[in-house]
Image (cartoon, rainbow, N blue to C red; front, side):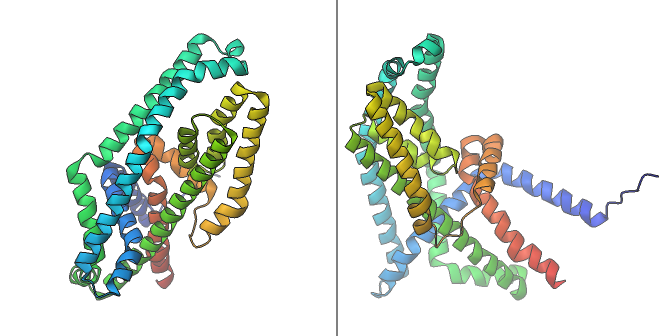
Length: 328
């Protein structure tokens, strides 16, 4: 006799709210990205503002000075990187058929496939530029991020007082605890991940330049960006460099492959333990799954907010729902 499966009313309500929450997250994904960027700015600038406050500089002036310093660093970095990046990327695209021919791919791959590959690579800078413009050319969005970060930096205590008026003193303490835990998790993860990407990219650039591999800058930037993808990213980033090395000479190809292997070993045993030791990382399998789901739901923006959304759900579940269940 088949067993009767009963579903409680609480389970149905929880499932409905959970699905509604997922839909809301998807619908406001752009706002979530802005909030995450504001939280990241807050986490990065807090130590600087704390040091300036020791010199009795008003908090508002400290925040403005920190903003000016951050914008100056970003401006000089973009001005220094973008021109050679565009030049080397264009040269790489135009010389790609020659490298593939030298390696022997022309025997296996037809000219039509090679042309399609070149077309996709050629559209990559345009897609990156489009994404950058969509994130930063919207003046309202940029202002919203900066204002929200400014408010978090300068009015944190007042924000907690205002929460008490809306949700009560007890709930306020719970929300503040969740916000603090979320700020620590997101900030530590983001700073650790960005630092790791920078170190891997810089190490790749130095190694490729020492070997004499052309297009070292775009290849190094690719290695840094793909560092966000566990396991697969470093291998994918090494493929173009190794192909170019073999396209020049077999010795250089093996040397490039050895360089990629060395960087991966340094990443596994030196960079990750040292950089991420103070950061509560995310399981690599969970990261891959979150990136895949994020890309499927929202494309590039989904990739950008996938891990932050997962961390948010994890923190809220751990600090609020699970403790609420245990206490009851």
